[in-house]
Image 1 (spheres, rainbow, N blue to C red):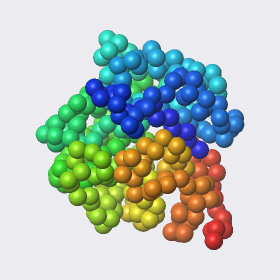
Image 2 (image 1 turned 90 degrees about the vertical axis):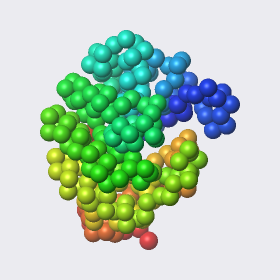
Image 3 (image 1 turned 90 degrees about the horizontal axis):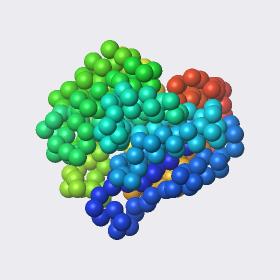
Image 4 (image 1 turned 120 degrees about the horizontal axis):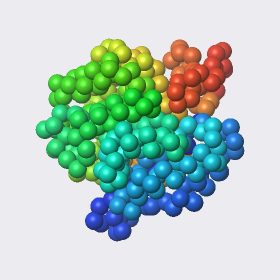
Length: 306
């Protein structure tokens, strides 16, 4: 089981007045970790955007405190966008900053912030984030320090098929160099409560085609993940027939981060049994894994719950 700690939304000038914004203290974050009995979770996932009051040393201290609570926990934390901000503020190189965080407990990094690498499209949808070269460089430096990472692609907005192929090709080329990416996660654009709400969302057929192309094209990625809270459990179940081999895991949506982003699932929480059923009903064998894809339990010949 994975525990995800969302620190808060990205900071902007209206932050103090945002009804849905929040900021967790160190104690509040650590209490979330302490709430789970030893052995009940394997990973703590920490993200939160950029914030002027939280710097590299603040986050390094947080990682160290989490490890003090339970040294066996795997900490996957901070997107390349967050890391780029931290390292610039600390006047460190990417390599120096990553080593500093690793020394304080960082084990891997997520794939968020990649969006679409094409410069024209990126400037249109996320001009305030680090550019494609900076994102790729941070992940390359992480891999060279034996810090594995994931990779994502936000699709279904202004981009064309050629932009998707270019995005995957850049990831594929870096994977050939470093072999540090663990999984590729296509993220469906949802048009709720954002500045691109006027755009239509992709169809289920288009989603499944995107998974299939990703699985064929990214032949050097061992895994392709369907992020079921965003696409819904029905599409996630179908995606197994289109190259997907990872469904992520159970979700605790107490932060409402998924529903606020326009998730297909209004209550994005699945029990272990429900996940096993979702996979088994499609003729596949469910395997519980940890962050590094080590197999923890194989659910063979498990009766499907009625």
